[in-house]
Image 1 (cartoon, helix red, strand yellow):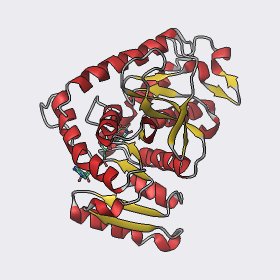
Image 2 (cartoon, helix red, strand yellow):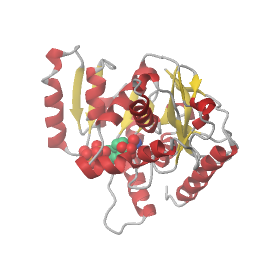
Image 3 (cartoon, rainbow, N blue to C red):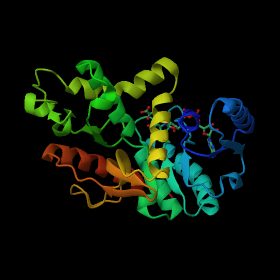
Length: 305
Ligand SMILES: NC(=O)C1=CN([C@@H]2O[C@H](COP(=O)(O)OP(=O)(O)OC[C@H]3O[C@@H](n4cnc5c(N)ncnc54)[C@H](O)[C@@H]3O)[C@@H](O)[C@H]2O)C=CC1
Ligand SMILES: CC(=O)C(=O)O
């Protein structure tokens, strides 16, 4: 709903169709959005449990998911989420064969949207450029906010990229952190290292802990991911060719030879991922990506299709 609200208020789409299995909640959310339309640009807001209302969608954002049950194994939880996507993805693609899928759902604590993006790609039969995970665009935004607090400069003027797996094993690219092109690594060559006198690694640690802390305080995270989704949809729908850290098929990049989805800087346009920007990563950063790729590949091997 936060994504829908951001899309509505930032004038990203002329039509939004909401689908859920919870019929009453869906109706309530639809009416609540519709009642604010007189203050906004006119947008058609529809909702139904029937996927026919999504017909002709240019983007389908997937946020449905099952939560981890007490004592449930990681693989079982992934499998339950795969089974949910088996119901959703073919119907979306049936009604919108030219769509772009943007996956946001995580299959539980310590498992990320990246695995479900791979699952959506497999189930959809769509080309790899048309299946995207929300990935580390959110992590990068959290990092830029925390950097802005430390530097007293607006988040939009603080530049830094978090890549790889969304969440715990994400990779901060310290060599690229800059303000107005001034690289912080030129001023502080130890940036991000264990012996960094300014302890910039604490910023990344805080990024990783963000979701856990917000969930502890309010039960879920919503506004930042909603804004991130809206910005990604805008880049695609208005063919902006702007660059964001999103989850994409990275086989062939940075020495990875497996079909896994991880975030790298991607140029987004009307066809989804136009291309991946090749960052100059250190060996340690490449190794971290490879480790995530191996872990994900193992989880993916256990999936029953
Ligand atoms: N990738 C990211 O950065 C983030 C991902 N998330 C993920 O987004 C997902 C949604 O989060 P919330 O909205 O807070 O959860 P929620 O539990 O409030 O909403 C999930 C919705 O999915 C619906 N649903 C369940 N099975 C369905 C099915 N088969 N078909 C259609 N709808 C179905 C439920 O009825 C419910 O309305 C979660 O997986 C969460 O982990 C949330 C925030 C950030
Ligand atoms: C829930 C989640 O993945 C996040 O807020 O980062």
